[in-house]
Every structure is written in structure tokens, then in C-alpha cells.
Amino acid sequence: MARQLDEQIVGRFPVGKRLRVLDVGMGQGTQALRLARAGHQVTGLERDATMIAAARDALAGQPEGIRERMRIVEGDGRDTGVHFLPGSFDVVLCHGVLMYVEEPDPLLAGLARMLAPGGLLSLLVRNGDALALRPGLYGDWAGALAAFDTVQYTNRLGLHVRADRLSTLTAKLAGIGAPLHTWYGVRVFTDTAPDGAAPPDDPETLLAAEERAGRTDPYRGVAALLHLCGVRG
Image (tube, rainbow, N blue to C red):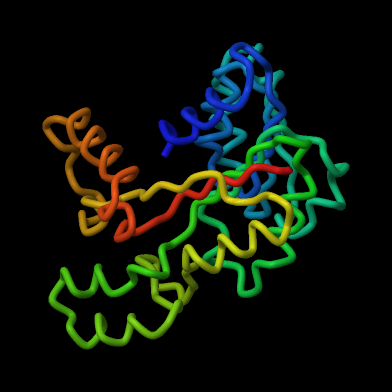
């Protein structure tokens, strides 16, 4: 996904431009720190105290220049308007958040308002069009049949969450003024790998296969996750 995001940033903004990035629901700050290391000015918004502590610990171990380029704000992603002025960011990330939001429309509208004209919105969501694939590959036939007719599912943490369909999000992005520019699949081949599995012997080849599948039909359509990139008009 990082490679996909970098492709969109390089294709949209001048080389060397220091971008203003907002990472909504930044978690432990993996993407935020990566972009700060690349020279961008990054703001991470997170409400979970444990994740904030992990992100601050990771940031504390960085060189001073990187620490100066990143700030962490405690808050809910649905309240971006409380913390920031409209149009304040060139890039807004919201990765792995929408599945935990029962009604995503206000959140999405708020994210779009944060973007400057021509800004990039990057969403990572659970693929509602492929929910039957994981139980089917595990041989859970009843679970596979049930998954065809719902966007609700239980994740690996045991939480009851929701997925999003590509067609639905395409319409929503158009409605909030950040129409879909392109989309990718994420975890096409590796979604059934068990948590804590040993790293592959050849991770670069695995990543190359995943990256190729994530941009190629029909493979990207059955990915566990979708990476959608919208552009503010």
C-alpha cells in the first residue's frame, strides 16, 4: 500500500515539494512516520491512548528533523473540523478506519473538507465485494454463503465491523467533491496467512506479486482490502 500511495503522490505533486499530510486514525504511526521521513509535514490524529503512546515512543526515537515534521493530535476522526481549518492539507489518509464507523458519511465529508484543491484522499477499506472469499478458502461454506448478502463481518480481533463496496464508495466520493481517481487491491494473495506467521524467504518477490495483482483485473477485485484514491476538485 505504501508503494501505491507513493505512486499517487509522485504523479500528482512536484518532486521535492513538502506536503501537508493528515493521517486520520494513524494507529501507531507507521505511515505518518514514513512520510515524515520522506520530508513531509505530517499531522497524526488518533483517539486510542495505547496507539498514541506507541506512536509517541516511535517518534521519540527519530532524529530531531523528523520529530519537528510530525505532530500528534488526540481526537476522533469524525471531528476533523474541530481541530483543523478546511483546505489545510495536500494529502489526507484514512487507512483501516471506516470498518469501525457505523455511519461513514459524516467522516468522509469531513476528510474531503480538509483537502486543498487538487489534494489527494487515500482510503483503505475492507472490500465488501469479496467477503465470501476468506471463509470460502478456509472451507467455511456456510460462512461463505452468508457473506454474499451482507457487508457485516467479524474481524480477526473478534470485533463485529463492516465493509464497503467499491460502487458505493465511488458514489460517495463523487458526492463529497473528491471523486475516485484510481483504486488498488491490497492483500490479494496473503489474506489467509495466519497472524504471527514467519516472514517469507523472498519478501521482495511476494511484494512484487501483490503489487502487480493489486493493480490488475480481475485480481484486484477479490482483494481483502481496497485502496481508493480520490482527488479534490
